[in-house]
Image (cartoon, rainbow, N blue to C red):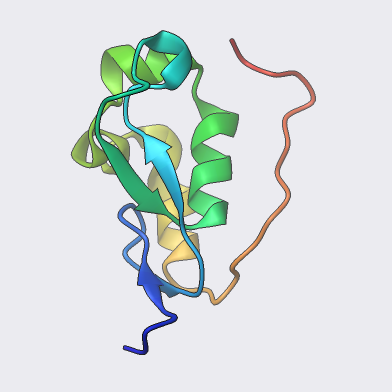
Length: 95
């Protein structure tokens, strides 16, 4: 693995860029809590599928996110692709 490749904590793919995801959203009191590196597709998808309240209550670990039925098909798909950026914005923002 080169110095420019990173590993996404959720899909476990080697990617060129990651962003830090707060396992407990900042808006729900997680400003100073644990973060994990995620590729843009995973980070975007998580925030598209779950509200901040859901993330805080039920999906505040990588294991919980990986075991979510809502992410099952997505994770199977993304693990077999080289895509590093997607646009999957929801028509309405979940709160």
